[in-house]
Length: 259
Image (spheres, rainbow, N blue to C red):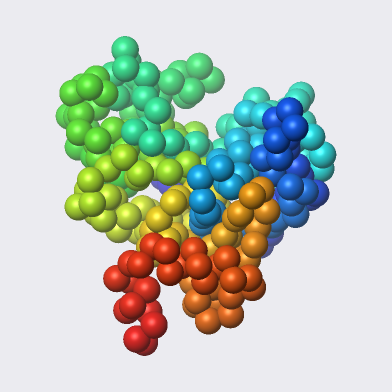
């Protein structure tokens, strides 16, 4: 059975975390806390540091300064591999291994950890129902699946170990609008059902507003403003916030303004 998680604490914490690549600043010293069971959407122009922040949280790259904690446990080089078992990670197209079937992709970590075959099959059935991906499609290879189906497989893999945290880096960016819209609805329902802590990177403000409890708008390695979409619209902290919202010129903005 899929378990609900503790909602009484911050699940992701960054304290004065920064990152440079040579002389190029990728993330300025940043302090950020994401409450358990909430969804924070990171958005901003290309190169603003949002994907770097995500890779720091999962321990793929080390910070130059500061400390990152997951569920109260400080992330270090020594425990990064273990802490990743608490984190699901989803990227565009699911990041699937093309030579493995969908089932093999989803279960790769569970098999490495020595899960019993019966436990794996039971978990697969749960995740198939949760993501609305028919079990019979799991025998196919990624090239035999549609983009939306590959993304659902990637989500299943991220959730296989029942993680407390879900990191999503532009997960729907490569999909056509209708498939993307359906997956957005499905993701929102999954977030509501599982109550995991989600850190979502997107370039689409409509998606950020729809999926995020809060939005953190970034520019040049810094968080310019954090709040709800109404906060950003009605109480912009910087002219850049208004300019960024207006630049996308989406229908949802006109609808929100009319309310």
